[in-house]
Length: 102
Image (cartoon, rainbow, N blue to C red):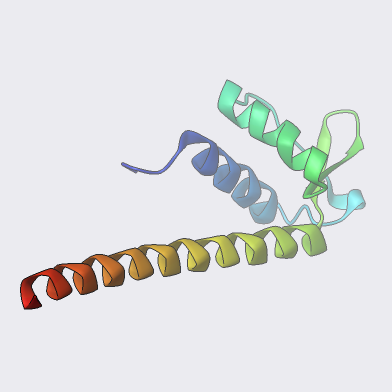
């Protein structure tokens, strides 16, 4: 996936792995073994954010409310970034039009 940061890919893979295993409760926690270093770092970050929780040593599950909050916050950031780009383009277009008009 060109242009997509490795951390985002690692996060998506971790979340998909736990969702595929239906690990959304402590009693359905799954081991996450053989992680690449990027995945390990992203796992630690997601644990810190409460999106992934450790039920017992080496067994993890997703916490759906925290995951939903994270996805909603990501959507807001994407919309804000798009609005900023659109605003910048509109300003540049307006400025270029204004310059040629005078």
